[in-house]
Image 1 (cartoon, rainbow, N blue to C red):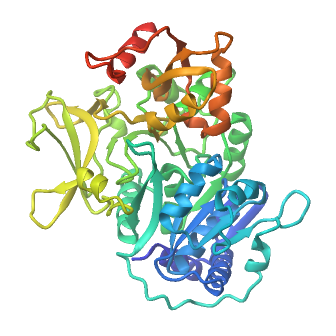
Image 2: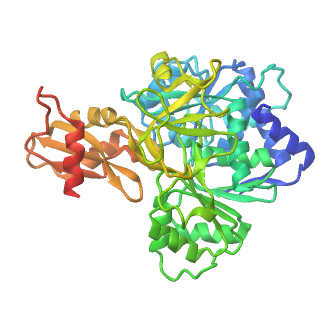
Image 3: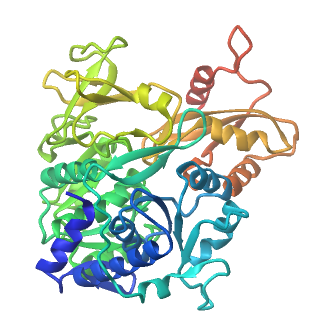
Length: 513
């Protein structure tokens, strides 16, 4: 079933029910369905056709949710991009996916204008700015939403691409992960099954819709006919807690940094958020003391520890009743999925032996957009001759009962806060600084982030400080890619052949922590 059909079905079955709450805006299922149909009509009138790609460049706002479903109703493929993305990376994504349209917020128009350059063939629609005006060079999203809605007969089916999510690659260039409607539906069905979601759930999401963990909160809520409360960040936890109480929120997806912020707060009494039914966590495993403290603060709330990656959304979950028995485990395969560990020859290894995690299931991606070499490395022949399975690039081991434990990354990609960071992309920015002679970027183990981005730097300017390096990176990189640890050295560790050794650099930084 195509994703947008779930919205239409719920709009027909429960038109007045609240689908989305974002800031001061509340949309019923009927309103969300109608607005997305109107925007779909505008996209069609401006040349968007079946299988075209449309970039959604927004933060967590109601317009982003409407945009995602509008793209699908037009028969096209949406590509959500983090609003902190800089112009050069956005330009690469736009060119790589050959975008037909871009839906944005007014504050992001300068980035879009720089990224598009002189390309006038792309339809751009924007919200109004703080001055109440639509940016020059963009159509008004409000005008688009005022058009008469009509069903578009695009004749799409569920094996068409629904979304194209860009994730960092080992070359430093992001790769577009191709997910069909069927892939998305299978992932959402599996996750809502083990979370025991129902249409009565009210889920609060502060995670970016450009991050698949955040995006799926929207897709799963609409699939179920539940309610999603959309917030832009967790910077002010007390405000979020008040929102949870006001709306009677039952589900709270979080990442370890959010858990750490909660646990650092004083004067929180056990059961202070009585409506919560479950909390889910991914990006990195929660330290056992954090799990114990969360369970103390949220008695009776089911706490789910999970592991996943963009290429298949979710891989494993740890049933809450196993938290005490299996500290550090990320659990078992999610429903309708097989997860197993193999050696370098693709043979399954016994319990206790580390190897690469392989995922088999209907939620596995179709491959990387226009990147056959990377696709062949990730998708390889499975147990049956007609199928491909996903080689995750992550090292795991199992216990005697088959529960999985993360060991480390097989390649150089750094997974931090649930995002993938290519060291070469960060190194390119570091090397562009006139005060830096050499640099190498590695992942530094971090109990909250999984890994933090660390940089060993040789200065050509002796006055250069750690903060100078971080500020330089912040001007050119998304926030999760900015090094959290910077160390200055007289020389970088090298192999016998004279090449900089990322492995030795990682060991050096880890020893210094």
